[in-house]
Length: 325
Image (cartoon, rainbow, N blue to C red; front, top):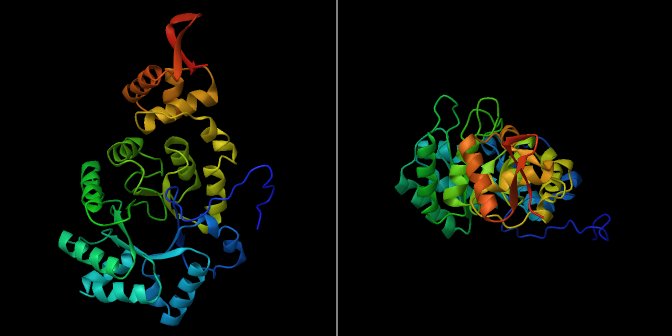
């Protein structure tokens, strides 16, 4: 069936998606109906949160999973459910039950407990043998017991060494006080830059429950960033951001050239292209980048011939930056 005003823009994004993955957090508050069918094309994974399946009848869980599958959406457990089973020594039983009920994706996390590498490899192997995709979530749920950046990088590295499909960077439902977010929900860009610089975007998903976080990550990393813990009510808004059909990201992707050097130069280029001629202090204020990162990004963009540097004729000490014509 054609999209609305398809003669002007074809906003279809046929599955399977190899990037720009969207994972929703399903709280089991309302059975997925017409409102979900309308946007199911843009949902790749539905994660039934936490240990919710424990409090449901088995037949109800299967009915819920089947409904998602009928719309072409893979269903994942919440990592907490599997963590609880690990504490009981019943992780294999859990994985087999999930597979038999139609869950297509297994999430392994250590948000509350620690799981040995041997146990994780065993669970990955079992899930693979049952035809499941595997996501490994990195991060702690307790804001008072957070991993350091180096520890986070080490765990991502270790997870990617296993036969998995995606590493998820913890964000919880709040997007506050965990991993890449500070206590107010602001993004710690030094963390994001460190993760993306080492691992790239493919195979990495950032949980981003707040719409402002989703917009910021797309503006900085591009439309193909994988995002998780998206509320069902935010899916359509997120997709318009990905496709540059909303004010925040309007037109940024079609006009942005290939930019080398990681996410920071891309973000600085976007700011300059959006605001016109601008000085370094203003760029730092708009991006939140520190002076050294900003200077390095500007130098990289100048070397690539993407921007030009001139002097403010009213103050020759002040440098101005604009897009190269």
